[in-house]
Amino acid sequence: MSRAHHAGKVDGTRPAPWSHANPILSSAARGWEGINVDVFRSRNVDFVAQYSDHVISIVLRGPFNLLQRRDGRVARATMRAGDIIITPVGEPKLLSHREEAEILKVRIDPGFFDGVVAEAVAGPPGSSKLLDNFGTRDAHIESLARALLAEARTEGLASAIYVESLANQLVVHLLRRYSSARKLVEDPTPLARYKLDRATDYINDNLREDLRLRDIARTLSMSPYHFAHVFKQTVGVTPHRYVIERRMERAKSLLRDTSLPIMQVALSVGYSNQSHFSTVFHRHTGRSPRGYRRDA
Image 1: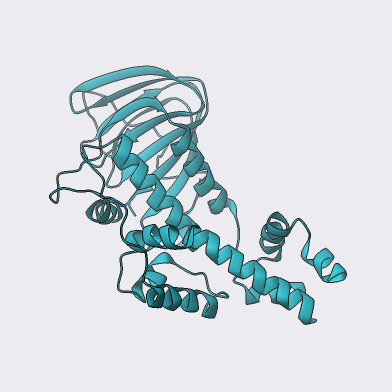
Image 2: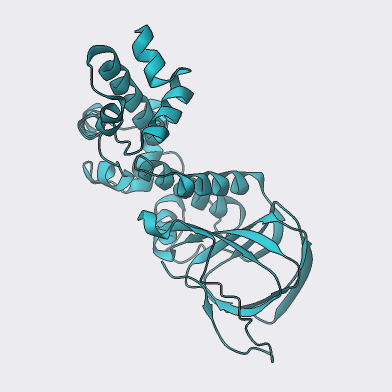
């Protein structure tokens, strides 16, 4: 996915030496599909950016006085932690502020966005556009963005299906609240039993892999968004939640019935980092893997 690019002078404004291409934290190396997150810390900013992704900016630390000029419109506001700016792909924008700011940017690939639109929105192709929004507050966007940031900070596997789930939720929320979409499609028909069995068999056979929605959906010849939607309607939990439950049940069985080292148990259920596995296991069971094995 592309980052912002400096666009040179606009209205006599010269880009600052500070580079928008150098985040202090990025998910770029994680191999996520359709979405990425970056954290930037900056001051004395005066530059023009051209985005090739849809960008959702969440202020992590302020306040700072921000000027934005885009498509002939000028906006000014004092930005505080929790404020959000939604920037659809398209026209370049000028940004200027002097105080130090820390900003989380969620970048959504237009192809991924359009794929969800095709499945979720009732209407002709191209009729649903993401809209500019400068300085809104939205607790759901902030929660999803911070969850993505937490995954970017987590080392090891076992996050791909969660990231895809968060990305789908974010796009659907943007379509409902910040787009030209008139109506989202009604809930689809639940999965037929044979399709549900095929999906759950695939999950159980691949718990040690970093499972992805697209791979599970492909076994049913469905799109990832459509599969996630009907799976939750059918089972009552998201695919991500179901995968975690199955991983934890498998882990409990291995801890109880084998003498495998805990790191090997973690690898067997898709976690390449023992610390990450232990955190998830404790969250799910209330006990550490070692404590569960001792008491089993």
